[in-house]
Image 1 (spheres, rainbow, N blue to C red):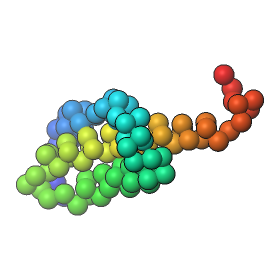
Image 2 (image 1 turned 30 degrees about the horizontal axis):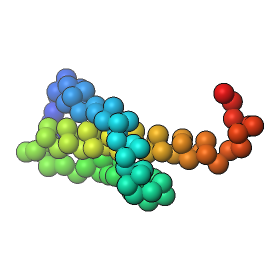
Image 3 (image 1 turned 60 degrees about the vertical axis):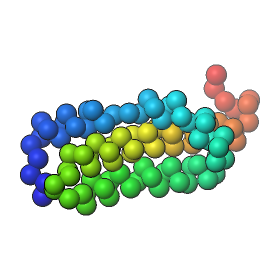
Image 4 (image 1 turned 180 degrees about the vertical axis):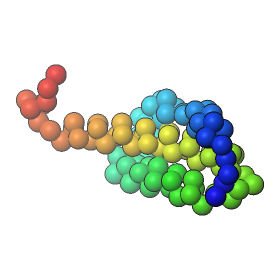
Length: 98
């Protein structure tokens, strides 16, 4: 138990919402690592956010929440953009709704 009040958790998680950074970095990360490697490791990184939330020590709880939430938000955004791009690339153009 971290014994944090709900208001503090809400403010901390609100400050850690850096999903827009993932949108800016998505194409660069994909170009650097490739789509398959990028999708796998970014998904793993996004999933680790929950583990960090659950196992973080009490004395660094707020810093841990901010860091893990920020990393998870960026990773989840990069993953979602890349997986949607991949799905669109494998569907024939005539079947895509424009």
